[in-house]
Image (cartoon, rainbow, N blue to C red; front, side, top):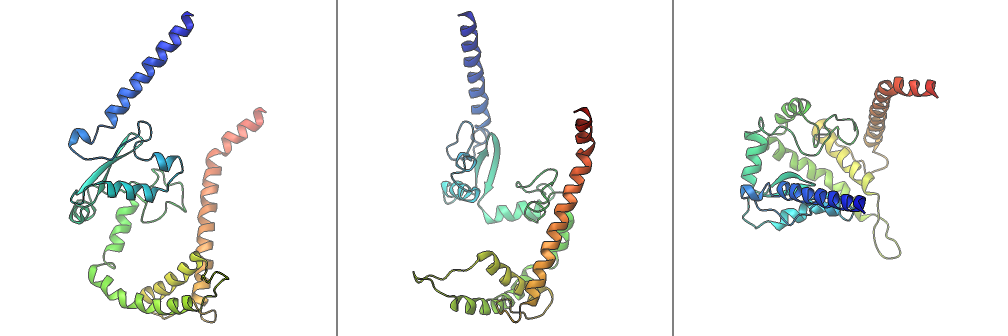
Length: 248
């Protein structure tokens, strides 16, 4: 009986301490006068994402829309970690350009960058690689140069529209195509036009050599990165696995 009372008391104290801790952590933005949507005591605002009910982009869209139209930002939580979602264009520009030295990294990404395929992109790489890559991308992607790219992108869209018009329809009168392949063809034409100054038509099976060879190079690059990551991981843990094998 004493053991049951002891366990019950310990459980009540633990739950009480967790409740106080969680409420304090989830009051980070309210203590600073920042609005937040309703939060879950365990998961913050990402309960539906963590339980696989909704994708992250839909959760972020709901958080964005939960703010008032004139709010420049809104706070939210991933578990008990506070995050800030910017909604004002001038504020976003200030954070990403003017105050880049203060906010150099993005939220999504890994600290050790082990996922070479999913995290080795401009959306997730961190310092110091992001600073170097940002410097390389700034000069060719100025506002005027982006405006000059638009006519080329529109020109690449013409064979794409023709391809869509010629798609076969099923018995329900709907057109179907593989979006991954469809998108890669369009992007290949844009890259050929903007980066190399040549006109290609990846939607024409007789003129899509540029697209086909680009796919081969991409697969080779991904395979090389995966193999490199695998070998690095193997070298790191091989002595440990070898010692286990010897002991057994």
